[in-house]
Length: 264
Image (cartoon, rainbow, N blue to C red):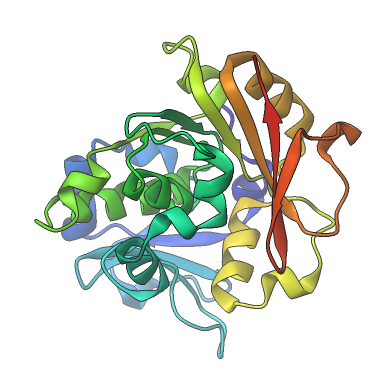
């Protein structure tokens, strides 16, 4: 299981009080996966730690400690932009157009190799896809696992998140029990992304935690091996192709595009 080197070197503190530890147990998450400094009360907060991971308002969140750092990073599918997008006609989403194309089948299987905060997996699940989502960063995985857990308790969301299977670890290892998928989706973090793509303070925090996917070429090669219909790669709109490999076609938006590599 590969853990991003950035998270290993990033100072963060987690509040391991009883509610937090109980939530870890509920999620089946091993505390040993957390490499930060554990404290038992907020008064013991390490002042030079830039981030605090805690259970607050019944949600696991990652909060930047600097003044003006913005809202904590939390996965919540019931509100905000993702809640709104999920309630709309998701067939109009560029991601859905890229993954499903003209295929109207509701049970298309998709491997999301870079789960992140789960928003793309959620949109695909809203579109009827059966999504296997992998996330190898332990903090991001915990945030996503907690968001899916809370959504599974919501009568309006449980049927949607029931289409998402979350796995912890490198996609090439975590998803190996499934031989192939109709589509494989990849949204890697690239070091050359411009600041304009990271305007939101939440995304700056997220990037600090995740770092970059230096092995994107290997992930892309694996995706081509296991996808039976197509591989979809999200890229900044004006950026180069992964491995300089021209896609079959692209679905473009204002700031990003989805490169589609048709298979078979």
